[in-house]
Amino acid sequence: MSSFMKAMLIVLCALWILLELAHAKHVRTTRHYKFNIKMQNVTRLCQTKSIVTVNGQFPGPRIIAREGDRVVIKVVNHVKYNISIHWHGIRQIRSGWADGPAYITQCPILPGQSYVYNFTIIGQRGTLWWHAHISWLRATLHGSIVILPKRHVPYPFPHPFKEVPIVLGEWWKADTEAVINQAIKTGLAPNTSDAHTINGLPGPLNNCSAKDTFKLKVQPGKTYLLRIINAALNDEMFFSIANHTLHVVEADAVYVKPFRTNIVLITPGQTTNVLLKTKSITPNAKFIIASRPYATGPASFDNTTAIGFLEYKKHSHSNTKPNNNNLKLFKPALPKFNDTVFAMNFNKKFRSLANSRFPAKLPKTVDRHFFFTVGLGISQCSKNQACQGPNNTRVAAAINNVSFVMPNTALLQAHFFNKSKGVFTTDFPSNPPFKFNYTGTPPKNIMVTSGTKVVVLPYNTKVELVLQDTSIIGAESHPLHLHGFNFFIVGQGNGNFDPKKDPSKFNLVDPPERNTAGVPSGGWVALRFLADNPGVWFMHCHLEVHTSWGLKMAWVVQDGKGRNQKLPPPPSDLPKC
Ligand SMILES: *[C@@H]1O[C@H](CO)[C@@H](O)[C@H](O)[C@H]1NC(C)=O
Ligand SMILES: *[C@@H]1O[C@H](CO)[C@@H](O)[C@H](O)[C@H]1NC(C)=O
Ligand SMILES: *[C@@H]1O[C@H](CO)[C@@H](O)[C@H](O)[C@H]1NC(C)=O
Ligand SMILES: *[C@@H]1O[C@H](CO)[C@@H](O)[C@H](O)[C@H]1NC(C)=O
Ligand SMILES: *[C@@H]1O[C@H](CO)[C@@H](O)[C@H](O)[C@H]1NC(C)=O
Ligand SMILES: *[C@@H]1O[C@H](CO)[C@@H](O)[C@H](O)[C@H]1NC(C)=O
Ligand SMILES: *[C@@H]1O[C@H](CO)[C@@H](O)[C@H](O)[C@H]1NC(C)=O
Ligand SMILES: *[C@@H]1O[C@H](CO)[C@@H](O)[C@H](O)[C@H]1NC(C)=O
Ligand SMILES: *[C@@H]1O[C@H](CO)[C@@H](O)[C@H](O)[C@H]1NC(C)=O
Ligand SMILES: *[C@@H]1O[C@H](CO)[C@@H](O)[C@H](O)[C@H]1NC(C)=O
Ligand SMILES: *[C@@H]1O[C@H](CO)[C@@H](O)[C@H](O)[C@H]1NC(C)=O
Ligand SMILES: *[C@@H]1O[C@H](CO)[C@@H](O)[C@H](O)[C@H]1NC(C)=O
Ligand SMILES: [Cu+2]
Image 1 (cartoon, rainbow, N blue to C red):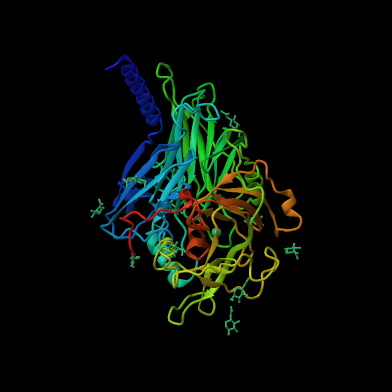
Image 2 (spheres, protein in one colour; image 1 turned 90 degrees about the horizontal axis):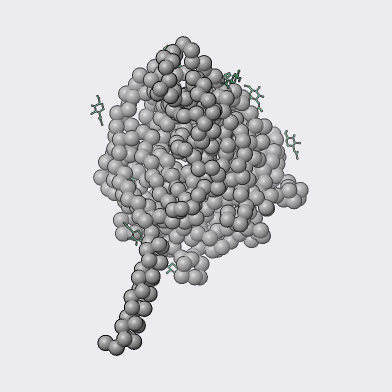
């Protein structure tokens, strides 16, 4: 071999090694999980109950990944119920088959069957969560998703000493499937939960529950990152820690401009990361962590308070004997259960970072405007149903007066295989059927219509959506959740949205980016999003009772022309109806 050839070989080898290294840097980590859906006996409030769990855990297992990772979860259904799991807030870019809402993106996983959810986390970091997305099974089937930034990428806030998920939920003495089935049969409001919980524990204010109390043991002078998730079925929650200020840094897996607050308000579906800085000296004290509902609607609600303790650890070399009698207990002050002024002010504190590293990529112009009323109403029951509402009616909930009817097969399959005929229609109204004083005296006729209707959007449509609460039956805050996208909250206000005056006040600079937003009780919220994700995307109230009553609809986003703008075919194990 000539020396020239040798030199060439060495150069080629070096190049190859460099290429390999460069490639290795981009090799994606895959995180594998197995979710065995199984029954488990769990005891709370002196009651042992067999509940549906993932791997026997309540709340369920935590998923940890980094931005950019692929996550592969094999869900095996060992229970008698149909199951589907939703990865709440994961954008599912071109992976709609893994989104999870039953009869929207997939048919349920039948008893004895399994399905592999396979998706990549693109451009997101923070806290999200997973939950069952069928009937009311998410009452016990839920857990946190922790998305760390890419390796070697720091948080845009001080690195915490420890990170702690705080999952807010409920304990139901009754079987939640029996609760919703009874409500559907009678047409009346379902029963409420029996206790609120913090990480599955109701705490000492409930009977027989003192030992089931969440304890956050902390050291003095440290910073803790609390990843707060509201997994409750039907209640928005206030959350506070006595004598401690919380520093909000992220919401729905998007960093926000940090702000301080003593009280966090969080709707079902939302996640909020807060920094908790502990006091610098060991104050030999414990502080109450409290959570109870923000409730605005006409129906009764679970008015119990979940309590946990923030406990300062003592130095092990301390000579003073622990003396519980000396422990001082401080309670946080929470707003009134219906403090809508607090809710509006709190929600207005959220702002995007909107800097060069984390720009607010909201549509600055709009292709399609939508105005949706959200609220309650009634609908006629069939003659043989014997509903208990007046004249054989039942309570319903609707968007633009359409109460959504669940199809018998999944919308995404019907759309992808061009078999939508008889499954859904594309005439979901862009505006309510007629104008009225939405937040004033309701019209005499409070009947709703029903149907499986969708809005079709061409790829990359820039959407502006105003959600207007109605006072039909009663004004109420509705936490609307959009699958497949984050939206930007460009405006919100009380009363009726004014299309002439309100848009000029929209925040197009640093609006918060979220996947769930509370439509203010007796008010409106304006959202913008770019429809850059082909598929069928559910949008619904995250109060499960309202979803069951029909407060839901779907967006069909068509494929784009480019190769990377099309939804790939479904995986071979996609469940069938
Ligand atoms: C739950 O407890 C009941 C009654 O003690 C028992 O029959 C059942 O096998 C238990 N189930 C599980 C999953 O452990
Ligand atoms: C997940 O999806 C990717 C991309 O479609 C595919 O290459 C991979 O084989 C899938 N993994 C599993 C375990 O199904
Ligand atoms: C709902 O509450 C009522 C009244 O307390 C009770 O009679 C009924 O059994 C409850 N329903 C379920 C499904 O637990
Ligand atoms: C606790 O139990 C007592 C006696 O059974 C009852 O009177 C009380 O209302 C219960 N309290 C709560 C918070 O459930
Ligand atoms: C906690 O706050 C209460 C008033 O809300 C105050 O009286 C008490 O001194 C505070 N305790 C500590 C340890 O900060
Ligand atoms: C809820 O509970 C609080 C404290 O126990 C009480 O002050 C309030 O009146 C209750 N509200 C309702 C609507 O029951
Ligand atoms: C809150 O509830 C109380 C009754 O508990 C009622 O008097 C008051 O008007 C309500 N406030 C709002 C803003 O609805
Ligand atoms: C029920 O129907 C009757 C007869 O049509 C009507 O007079 C009555 O007003 C209705 N009641 C309600 C609450 O709609
Ligand atoms: C559905 O129809 C579109 C447009 O007519 C076509 O491009 C596509 O291949 C069809 N898909 C299937 C699965 O038949
Ligand atoms: C709508 O109703 C509210 C409450 O009754 C009232 O304050 C408001 O003036 C009404 N708005 C219009 C445009 O009539
Ligand atoms: C809703 O639709 C029903 C049935 O078509 C109609 O009677 C009612 O007036 C509509 N209500 C509103 C608020 O649009
Ligand atoms: C489970 O799902 C299948 C397929 O959609 C359906 O036929 C069946 O009725 C469902 N079972 C129950 C108990 O809902
Ligand atoms: Cu609602």
